[in-house]
Image (cartoon, rainbow, N blue to C red; front, side, top):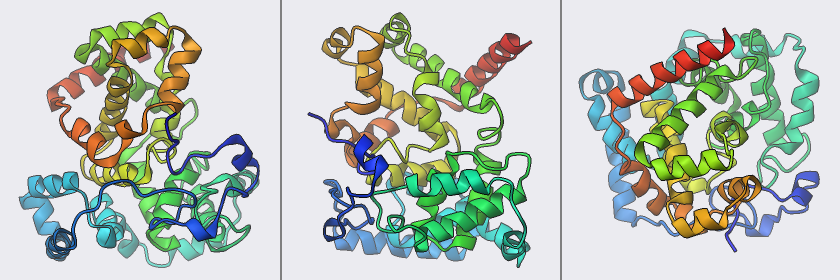
Length: 342
Protein backbone atom coordinates (compact mmCIF):
# COMPACT_ATOMS: atom_id res chain seq x y z
CA UNK A 1 0.00 0.00 0.00
CA UNK A 2 1.42 3.37 -0.98
CA UNK A 3 2.00 6.05 1.59
CA UNK A 4 0.12 9.36 1.43
CA UNK A 5 2.16 12.55 1.00
CA UNK A 6 3.17 14.06 4.34
CA UNK A 7 0.90 17.06 3.85
CA UNK A 8 -2.19 15.09 2.80
CA UNK A 9 -5.11 14.33 5.11
CA UNK A 10 -7.64 11.56 5.51
CA UNK A 11 -11.33 12.46 5.44
CA UNK A 12 -11.49 12.04 9.20
CA UNK A 13 -8.51 14.35 9.73
CA UNK A 14 -10.08 16.99 7.50
CA UNK A 15 -12.99 17.15 9.92
CA UNK A 16 -10.89 17.34 13.07
CA UNK A 17 -7.33 17.92 14.14
CA UNK A 18 -7.08 14.59 15.93
CA UNK A 19 -4.40 13.51 13.48
CA UNK A 20 -1.94 16.03 14.87
CA UNK A 21 0.50 14.65 17.41
CA UNK A 22 3.02 17.20 18.75
CA UNK A 23 5.27 14.37 19.94
CA UNK A 24 5.94 13.22 16.39
CA UNK A 25 6.61 16.48 14.57
CA UNK A 26 9.26 16.27 11.86
CA UNK A 27 11.84 18.91 11.02
CA UNK A 28 9.38 20.74 8.75
CA UNK A 29 6.65 20.91 11.39
CA UNK A 30 4.35 18.11 10.15
CA UNK A 31 2.96 15.50 12.53
CA UNK A 32 2.94 11.70 12.13
CA UNK A 33 5.25 11.80 9.15
CA UNK A 34 8.79 11.02 8.11
CA UNK A 35 11.15 13.38 6.37
CA UNK A 36 12.23 11.12 3.57
CA UNK A 37 15.48 9.38 2.82
CA UNK A 38 17.52 12.32 1.60
CA UNK A 39 20.08 13.58 4.12
CA UNK A 40 23.04 15.54 2.71
CA UNK A 41 26.10 15.48 4.92
CA UNK A 42 26.84 18.50 7.09
CA UNK A 43 29.85 19.54 5.01
CA UNK A 44 27.77 19.69 1.82
CA UNK A 45 25.06 21.68 3.62
CA UNK A 46 27.59 24.22 4.93
CA UNK A 47 29.23 24.49 1.51
CA UNK A 48 25.89 25.21 -0.17
CA UNK A 49 24.94 27.68 2.54
CA UNK A 50 28.17 29.59 1.95
CA UNK A 51 27.61 29.68 -1.82
CA UNK A 52 24.05 30.91 -1.42
CA UNK A 53 25.04 33.49 1.18
CA UNK A 54 27.56 34.94 -1.26
CA UNK A 55 25.02 34.85 -4.09
CA UNK A 56 22.41 36.72 -2.05
CA UNK A 57 24.92 39.44 -1.23
CA UNK A 58 25.40 40.11 -4.95
CA UNK A 59 21.93 39.15 -6.13
CA UNK A 60 21.02 41.82 -8.67
CA UNK A 61 24.37 41.59 -10.43
CA UNK A 62 24.27 37.80 -10.47
CA UNK A 63 20.76 37.61 -11.91
CA UNK A 64 21.68 39.90 -14.81
CA UNK A 65 25.15 38.53 -15.49
CA UNK A 66 24.96 34.82 -14.63
CA UNK A 67 21.38 33.59 -14.39
CA UNK A 68 22.44 30.11 -15.48
CA UNK A 69 24.51 29.77 -12.30
CA UNK A 70 21.44 30.63 -10.21
CA UNK A 71 19.32 28.13 -12.13
CA UNK A 72 21.84 25.32 -11.67
CA UNK A 73 22.01 25.92 -7.93
CA UNK A 74 18.23 26.14 -7.60
CA UNK A 75 17.97 22.79 -9.33
CA UNK A 76 20.40 21.31 -6.81
CA UNK A 77 18.23 22.60 -3.98
CA UNK A 78 18.44 25.71 -1.84
CA UNK A 79 19.70 25.21 1.74
CA UNK A 80 16.66 25.27 4.00
CA UNK A 81 18.24 27.83 6.31
CA UNK A 82 18.36 30.32 3.41
CA UNK A 83 15.18 29.35 1.56
CA UNK A 84 13.13 32.28 2.81
CA UNK A 85 15.72 34.83 1.70
CA UNK A 86 16.32 33.02 -1.60
CA UNK A 87 12.62 32.70 -2.44
CA UNK A 88 12.04 36.38 -1.69
CA UNK A 89 14.98 37.31 -3.90
CA UNK A 90 13.97 34.98 -6.73
CA UNK A 91 10.35 36.14 -6.77
CA UNK A 92 11.14 39.84 -6.41
CA UNK A 93 9.13 40.00 -3.17
CA UNK A 94 12.02 41.58 -1.27
CA UNK A 95 12.18 44.49 -3.71
CA UNK A 96 8.39 44.90 -3.67
CA UNK A 97 8.32 45.12 0.10
CA UNK A 98 11.16 47.63 0.12
CA UNK A 99 9.33 49.83 -2.38
CA UNK A 100 6.06 49.74 -0.43
CA UNK A 101 6.86 50.40 3.24
CA UNK A 102 3.83 50.35 5.49
CA UNK A 103 1.39 49.17 2.82
CA UNK A 104 0.79 45.78 4.43
CA UNK A 105 -0.31 47.32 7.73
CA UNK A 106 -2.42 49.90 5.88
CA UNK A 107 -4.26 47.15 4.00
CA UNK A 108 -5.04 45.35 7.25
CA UNK A 109 -6.88 48.42 8.54
CA UNK A 110 -9.42 48.14 5.71
CA UNK A 111 -12.45 45.87 5.37
CA UNK A 112 -12.51 42.88 3.02
CA UNK A 113 -15.67 41.39 1.54
CA UNK A 114 -13.88 38.05 1.36
CA UNK A 115 -13.42 37.48 5.10
CA UNK A 116 -16.32 35.04 5.48
CA UNK A 117 -14.70 32.74 2.90
CA UNK A 118 -11.21 33.19 4.35
CA UNK A 119 -12.45 32.37 7.87
CA UNK A 120 -14.17 29.25 6.54
CA UNK A 121 -10.98 27.94 4.96
CA UNK A 122 -8.44 28.80 7.68
CA UNK A 123 -9.09 25.69 9.84
CA UNK A 124 -8.74 23.44 6.77
CA UNK A 125 -5.24 24.56 5.82
CA UNK A 126 -2.32 22.30 6.79
CA UNK A 127 -4.12 20.55 9.64
CA UNK A 128 -1.10 18.34 10.30
CA UNK A 129 1.35 21.23 10.64
CA UNK A 130 2.15 22.52 14.11
CA UNK A 131 1.90 26.16 13.00
CA UNK A 132 -1.74 25.86 11.93
CA UNK A 133 -3.34 23.33 14.29
CA UNK A 134 -4.47 25.77 16.99
CA UNK A 135 -7.67 27.71 16.29
CA UNK A 136 -6.75 31.39 16.04
CA UNK A 137 -3.19 30.49 16.95
CA UNK A 138 -0.15 32.18 15.42
CA UNK A 139 -0.37 30.36 12.08
CA UNK A 140 -4.06 30.94 11.46
CA UNK A 141 -3.76 34.55 12.63
CA UNK A 142 -0.87 35.27 10.28
CA UNK A 143 -2.59 33.49 7.38
CA UNK A 144 -5.73 35.56 8.00
CA UNK A 145 -3.64 38.73 7.72
CA UNK A 146 -1.91 37.62 4.52
CA UNK A 147 -5.10 36.56 2.76
CA UNK A 148 -7.09 39.58 3.91
CA UNK A 149 -4.37 41.97 2.76
CA UNK A 150 -4.14 40.27 -0.63
CA UNK A 151 -7.91 40.33 -1.18
CA UNK A 152 -7.82 44.11 -0.70
CA UNK A 153 -4.57 44.64 -2.61
CA UNK A 154 -5.94 42.84 -5.68
CA UNK A 155 -9.74 43.31 -5.65
CA UNK A 156 -10.13 41.90 -9.18
CA UNK A 157 -9.01 38.52 -7.86
CA UNK A 158 -9.95 38.86 -4.21
CA UNK A 159 -9.62 35.44 -2.62
CA UNK A 160 -9.58 31.87 -3.94
CA UNK A 161 -9.37 28.69 -1.86
CA UNK A 162 -6.07 27.57 -3.34
CA UNK A 163 -4.37 30.65 -1.89
CA UNK A 164 -4.28 29.04 1.55
CA UNK A 165 -1.84 26.43 0.26
CA UNK A 166 0.46 29.09 -1.21
CA UNK A 167 0.25 31.37 1.81
CA UNK A 168 0.81 28.46 4.17
CA UNK A 169 4.09 27.26 2.69
CA UNK A 170 5.36 30.83 2.75
CA UNK A 171 4.35 31.34 6.38
CA UNK A 172 6.28 28.23 7.36
CA UNK A 173 9.41 30.07 6.28
CA UNK A 174 8.82 33.79 6.90
CA UNK A 175 6.72 36.33 8.84
CA UNK A 176 3.38 37.60 7.57
CA UNK A 177 4.49 40.76 5.78
CA UNK A 178 7.20 38.92 3.86
CA UNK A 179 4.74 36.13 3.05
CA UNK A 180 2.22 38.69 1.78
CA UNK A 181 4.65 40.29 -0.68
CA UNK A 182 5.81 36.83 -1.75
CA UNK A 183 2.19 35.87 -2.43
CA UNK A 184 1.73 39.06 -4.46
CA UNK A 185 4.84 38.28 -6.50
CA UNK A 186 3.93 34.64 -7.09
CA UNK A 187 0.38 35.35 -8.26
CA UNK A 188 1.33 38.35 -10.40
CA UNK A 189 4.61 37.07 -11.83
CA UNK A 190 4.28 33.30 -11.99
CA UNK A 191 0.55 32.51 -11.91
CA UNK A 192 -1.29 35.35 -13.68
CA UNK A 193 -4.86 34.36 -14.34
CA UNK A 194 -4.69 31.25 -12.15
CA UNK A 195 -7.09 32.62 -9.56
CA UNK A 196 -9.38 34.48 -11.95
CA UNK A 197 -12.96 33.47 -12.67
CA UNK A 198 -13.13 30.37 -14.84
CA UNK A 199 -9.53 29.37 -14.11
CA UNK A 200 -8.73 29.70 -17.82
CA UNK A 201 -4.98 29.99 -17.23
CA UNK A 202 -5.04 26.75 -15.24
CA UNK A 203 -7.06 25.05 -17.98
CA UNK A 204 -4.57 26.24 -20.58
CA UNK A 205 -1.56 24.89 -18.68
CA UNK A 206 -3.42 21.61 -18.19
CA UNK A 207 -3.86 21.35 -21.95
CA UNK A 208 -0.18 22.14 -22.47
CA UNK A 209 0.72 19.37 -20.04
CA UNK A 210 -1.53 16.86 -21.83
CA UNK A 211 -0.07 17.81 -25.20
CA UNK A 212 3.49 17.36 -23.92
CA UNK A 213 2.60 13.93 -22.53
CA UNK A 214 1.27 13.00 -25.97
CA UNK A 215 4.51 14.15 -27.63
CA UNK A 216 6.68 12.23 -25.17
CA UNK A 217 4.67 9.02 -24.78
CA UNK A 218 1.68 8.58 -27.13
CA UNK A 219 0.76 5.28 -25.46
CA UNK A 220 0.15 6.96 -22.11
CA UNK A 221 -1.72 9.77 -23.82
CA UNK A 222 -3.95 7.26 -25.60
CA UNK A 223 -4.54 5.41 -22.33
CA UNK A 224 -5.68 8.62 -20.59
CA UNK A 225 -7.93 9.53 -23.50
CA UNK A 226 -9.45 6.03 -23.61
CA UNK A 227 -10.41 6.33 -19.94
CA UNK A 228 -11.47 9.97 -20.29
CA UNK A 229 -8.95 11.09 -17.64
CA UNK A 230 -8.68 14.77 -18.52
CA UNK A 231 -6.40 17.29 -16.81
CA UNK A 232 -9.39 19.17 -15.40
CA UNK A 233 -10.01 16.22 -13.06
CA UNK A 234 -6.60 16.38 -11.36
CA UNK A 235 -4.41 19.25 -12.55
CA UNK A 236 -6.43 22.11 -11.08
CA UNK A 237 -5.37 21.13 -7.57
CA UNK A 238 -1.83 20.36 -8.74
CA UNK A 239 -1.36 23.79 -10.28
CA UNK A 240 -3.42 26.02 -7.96
CA UNK A 241 -1.72 24.57 -4.88
CA UNK A 242 1.66 24.21 -6.61
CA UNK A 243 1.83 20.55 -5.49
CA UNK A 244 1.72 21.39 -1.77
CA UNK A 245 -1.16 18.91 -1.38
CA UNK A 246 0.25 16.28 -3.73
CA UNK A 247 3.87 15.41 -3.00
CA UNK A 248 6.10 14.67 0.02
CA UNK A 249 7.26 17.91 1.58
CA UNK A 250 10.95 17.59 0.72
CA UNK A 251 9.97 17.10 -2.91
CA UNK A 252 7.60 20.07 -2.72
CA UNK A 253 10.38 22.34 -1.46
CA UNK A 254 12.74 21.26 -4.24
CA UNK A 255 10.07 21.91 -6.87
CA UNK A 256 9.45 25.35 -5.40
CA UNK A 257 13.18 26.13 -5.54
CA UNK A 258 12.99 25.55 -9.29
CA UNK A 259 9.53 27.07 -9.76
CA UNK A 260 10.55 30.43 -8.30
CA UNK A 261 13.63 30.46 -10.51
CA UNK A 262 12.27 29.15 -13.83
CA UNK A 263 8.55 29.86 -13.67
CA UNK A 264 5.31 28.00 -14.29
CA UNK A 265 6.86 25.60 -16.79
CA UNK A 266 8.28 23.79 -13.73
CA UNK A 267 4.74 23.08 -12.53
CA UNK A 268 3.84 21.77 -15.98
CA UNK A 269 6.96 19.59 -16.18
CA UNK A 270 6.23 18.26 -12.69
CA UNK A 271 2.78 17.22 -13.87
CA UNK A 272 4.21 15.55 -16.97
CA UNK A 273 6.70 13.69 -14.76
CA UNK A 274 3.94 12.49 -12.42
CA UNK A 275 1.86 11.16 -15.32
CA UNK A 276 4.80 9.41 -16.97
CA UNK A 277 5.86 7.80 -13.68
CA UNK A 278 2.30 6.74 -12.93
CA UNK A 279 1.52 5.00 -16.20
CA UNK A 280 4.81 4.04 -17.85
CA UNK A 281 4.30 0.42 -16.76
CA UNK A 282 1.86 -1.43 -19.04
CA UNK A 283 0.79 -3.61 -16.11
CA UNK A 284 -0.41 -0.49 -14.29
CA UNK A 285 -2.27 0.72 -17.37
CA UNK A 286 -3.94 -2.67 -17.74
CA UNK A 287 -4.97 -2.67 -14.07
CA UNK A 288 -6.34 0.88 -14.28
CA UNK A 289 -8.93 -0.06 -16.87
CA UNK A 290 -11.56 2.55 -15.98
CA UNK A 291 -11.87 6.26 -15.32
CA UNK A 292 -12.21 5.77 -11.56
CA UNK A 293 -9.27 3.39 -11.24
CA UNK A 294 -6.94 5.50 -13.37
CA UNK A 295 -7.82 8.78 -11.66
CA UNK A 296 -7.57 7.35 -8.13
CA UNK A 297 -4.20 5.79 -8.91
CA UNK A 298 -2.84 9.04 -10.29
CA UNK A 299 -4.14 11.20 -7.44
CA UNK A 300 -3.81 8.97 -4.39
CA UNK A 301 -2.07 5.64 -4.96
CA UNK A 302 1.30 6.31 -6.56
CA UNK A 303 4.02 4.22 -4.90
CA UNK A 304 5.95 6.16 -2.28
CA UNK A 305 9.36 5.57 -3.84
CA UNK A 306 8.29 7.32 -7.06
CA UNK A 307 7.62 10.55 -5.16
CA UNK A 308 10.68 10.48 -2.90
CA UNK A 309 12.83 13.58 -3.31
CA UNK A 310 15.98 12.24 -4.95
CA UNK A 311 14.21 9.83 -7.30
CA UNK A 312 11.51 12.27 -8.36
CA UNK A 313 13.89 15.17 -8.89
CA UNK A 314 16.19 13.01 -11.02
CA UNK A 315 13.22 12.09 -13.19
CA UNK A 316 12.06 15.70 -13.40
CA UNK A 317 15.50 17.06 -14.27
CA UNK A 318 15.96 14.27 -16.82
CA UNK A 319 12.82 15.34 -18.67
CA UNK A 320 14.09 17.47 -21.54
CA UNK A 321 11.51 19.83 -22.99
CA UNK A 322 12.98 22.74 -24.93
CA UNK A 323 11.87 26.34 -24.59
CA UNK A 324 10.80 26.21 -28.23
CA UNK A 325 8.62 23.14 -27.60
CA UNK A 326 7.02 24.85 -24.60
CA UNK A 327 6.32 27.98 -26.62
CA UNK A 328 4.90 26.15 -29.64
CA UNK A 329 2.71 23.92 -27.47
CA UNK A 330 1.46 26.89 -25.47
CA UNK A 331 0.53 28.87 -28.56
CA UNK A 332 -1.22 25.88 -30.15
CA UNK A 333 -3.27 25.12 -27.04
CA UNK A 334 -4.08 28.80 -26.51
CA UNK A 335 -5.50 28.97 -30.04
CA UNK A 336 -7.64 25.88 -29.39
CA UNK A 337 -8.90 27.26 -26.09
CA UNK A 338 -9.87 30.56 -27.71
CA UNK A 339 -11.64 28.66 -30.47
CA UNK A 340 -13.66 26.72 -27.89
CA UNK A 341 -14.80 29.91 -26.18
CA UNK A 342 -15.44 31.92 -29.34
